Every structure is written in C-alpha cells, then in structure tokens.
Length: 187
Length: 290
Image 1 (cartoon, rainbow over the protein chains, first blue to last red):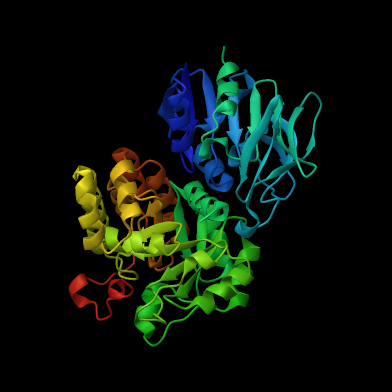
Image 2: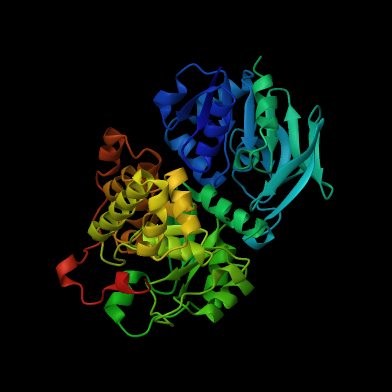
C-alpha cells in the first residue's frame, strides 16, 4: 500500500511516521512530478489551509489531486485537510477541492488560548483522544455524509464515501486507530 | 508541564514547512497572508528600522496588534522584551497566538528570562546554541528559532547558530549514557533534556531559522541545514517587491531541495534589502539573553 502525504506545509511528517509504523509505504507530494506517481491513498495533513491551498494550485497539483479524490481514492484529512475538502467555508471566500459536502468554519473555537484536548467517540471507536488546535468544526452536512464524532454538539469528524475528515489531529498522539481505519478503506 | 504545553508545542508543529513574516500594518499582514505566510509577527518597526532608529525598543501598541489580528485568519505572533513578563501578560490578555520573547527588542532584564511555564499562551525564543535552546525550553518555550542577526539581511549568523546546534546535538547523541551528566553540567541545562536529545536526536520542540533571511536561496539554505521553517523579518518589506519576494520564499521553503524551482523563483525579484555586513554592525542583538 502506497500512501501519498501532501507535504507542502504543516504537520505531514507526523502522519508519515504513523503510517510507516503501521506498515504502509509513504511518499511525499511537494510538486507536480510527485502527484503523477501511482498511489493508493491520500493524506491531507494539518497546517495552514491558506498556505496549502495556495501552494497546491501554484505548484500545479490541484487538478490532478481533485480528480483523484473525485475518482474515489481513499482520503484521510485532518484539520486544514478538512478545510481543503469542504464544499463550503462559512467564514472564508476561498474554497479548495470542494469534494466533501459539508460547511466548515475555520478557527471555529477561536485563537490558540482556546485550543483544547478531549476524548470522544469516533464512529465505533470509543475514547479516542482528540486535540483541537485553532481547529475548524463542521456546521452542517449534506446528504449521505456520515457523522462520526461530535464534541459539545459540534460535528468534528465525518465520512463521505472515500473521504474521512476530522477537525482534530490523530497524527500527533500515539493512538493509531483512526489511521488503521483509513488503511482499512484501501483494501 | 501539562496538556496546555503539549497543545502549544503542537501549534508550532502545524507551522512547520512554513514562513512567518514580520508585518507592521494590517495591509502588510494581508499581503503576507495572500503570499502564503503560515503566520505573521506583528510589530511596530521591523528589525532593520529598529537598528536605524536606535533607542529603546518595546512591545508594540496592543491596538496595532489587534488591527492585524482582525485583518488575517492565520496565527498572529508578537514580540515582548526579554524578561518583561508584564508585556507578555498584556499579549496574552489580547489573545495573541504566540509570544516571541525576543532579543530584537531592548532586554528588560539582563539576568532572568520570563517564567513561561506560568502562561497559557505559547512562547518562541531565540537561541545561538543548544545550551540556550534547552534553557529556554526548560523555562517553558514551546518553539525555538535561531537568533541569527536580525535586521541585517546577512545569513551568516543564522547559519552559524544552526550548525552549532546541529553539531552539539550530534555530539550528545554520540556520548555514552554515563557521560550525559557531565554534558548537562557543561551546557548548564537539566539532565532530563540532555537525555531527551540523546534518545531522540533532536530538541523536544520545533526549531525554525530566523535572523538575516533575505532571499529564497537563504530560506532553502536554512531548511537544508535542518530548520523546520523560517522567520523572515526585514527581508520582505525592506525589499523592492514584497509580495513577489514573499511568495518566492514560501515556495522555496516548500521545495527546499529543488534547485531548478528555486532558480526560477529567484528571477526578477527586484532589489533585495541592502543589508549590513557582520563587520559593520554596531548593535549585536544576538548577545542579548543567554
């Protein structure tokens, strides 16, 4: 299994290490040449969505990646990655891949002082540790979007066909269950 | 140190592979965000102008910082003077995302740094070597940057500091375990932090380059030397075409090993900041706070 991790900015190395520890082969996507390779899954990591959204366009990766997502490649998106996938961003005029029928709010909890840790359910997984860092949350979802997690009534994780997206950062902690679930989507 | 400290270290992890730009107005902040900055540093005068103006340099007007917070959606950082914990309290009160306890401003205390463990807001601090970096981390810093020599446009000091830190890390990694006690004593840092470096081959927080970055090539040089991201201070808004230079530096950091790309990014950037050579500097900022 070859997993491609978007590596233009943000916490991509953390995903790479976790996926490698689960036995996946990992490649980095930094420019057009990289996205032309064959790969079986895609990870959109945390970071700043404004930076990542700009660089994937200007480094000519946008169209190819969007097509791959639309064609059904399994995607794991965390924090900024969720924003890249969202069809609508309520507090930003930008939008990016727009392949996930949800409306998200950027920095929905506020500034860094409002960043927090909690534990919650993620679909069938119980007591999943969740770190929210200047995180977005999902305000509303479209048809056929499965809600996996809610924290204080706000939607923080969803699944829609091949796309698994969340506001928090499973890559920063030692609990590998969400990454295992993602790798399970590849089989 | 608990969960808050982890979350603060992790915000720095989210900034990795990015460029943090000094800005003095909401308009500059917007230019920086549009150009792809992963955060901005709000300050009244950029280091080059602080050098030119002389005198005591302090924390910026909170109103000016708030204006920048309102102008952009990316994290906003601001500087306080070394040891000036009340300036830090003020910055925390206005909800800043990261405080830079910075040698660029005039130090408020020539002995003590701020006890950063007493704050909820994260701190980044400058370091010239591993000892300084680990001392700042022990005081509660959740991110480190090289000091370089700010406001000069000269990369030599940042290179020196990054290489020094790297070689000191390599040395600790190569030591026998029973030699780590003596190394902690020499570096004037806690034994536990030396053990961390020995085991993990790195410092426990994210490490950026800062001080003297003026071109895409400078930024890529620091990344190839092991920086995890770059601060650009005077280099952008003291140059001929700030927006273009800022975008070029962002792309060079994302693809720091791609010489062909960096070559094309380096074309027609207009005038770089003039810069001051090491031998011409009258005020050595890196000597502040050890």
